[in-house]
Length: 250
Ligand SMILES: C[S@@+](CC[C@H](N)C(=O)[O-])C[C@H]1O[C@@H](n2cnc3c(N)ncnc32)[C@H](O)[C@@H]1O
Image (cartoon, rainbow, N blue to C red; front, side, top):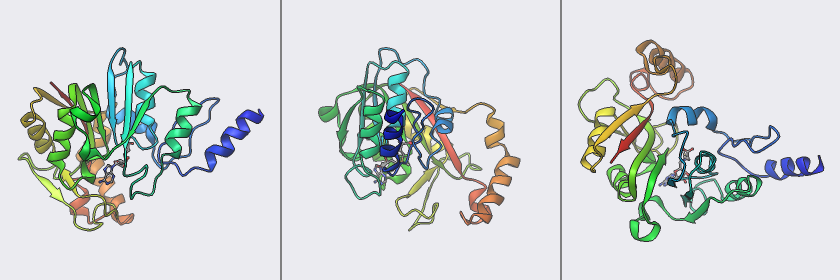
């Protein structure tokens, strides 16, 4: 019991992004609804024998989940939120790593500096919540593509959902969610086009259970109204925005 109390006390001294289930019902108090996001990302439930690279891992929720799903090797990478200019640190990752008795490896490296020469190549690459933070999104996708042998999973802000032609919206200053580290939101056609141009043969938009609840026009309409109340932006903008996950296969 003292052990559990000590764990909780040490955990509460850390500023968390991810909500990571540890043990005995203890979940790290993150801002992010990580378990809900896991459903949206559709991470394969069986990763037995796979190598997985998690680019922008932060507290490591998805790295630890990949390990739980059977991955043989997992490498978690980050810089911005570990030792870079972001508000985060690596304390959460280190704490969860110890609490979960994890074998996940880690490397402090900026997303744009990753190459096959310095990290190797992986069966599965996770590029979750990173794309819209990059000033050069196509360059970021190329980095992830270059180190991917089988499956690249990208989760991102999307915009222009009403357009069939490829497009990408630029957000000056902090105009996307009051965060000046957000730059770009592509639409579905742009994501599919970029990933195909990078050599992926098949690109799928993956949906959580009951996708019509999340992406149908009435639901986007209500979400956009909520966005106006929460001052996330004008209605005509938020009605066409959302978050989506893409699975790209070699
Ligand atoms: C929204 S968090 C997503 C964390 C995790 N991958 C997830 O999906 O829950 C964004 C991640 O991108 C990383 N990142 C990489 N380059 C960045 C940049 N230029 N600006 C902001 N964040 C950046 C951050 O360190 C952080 O880990």
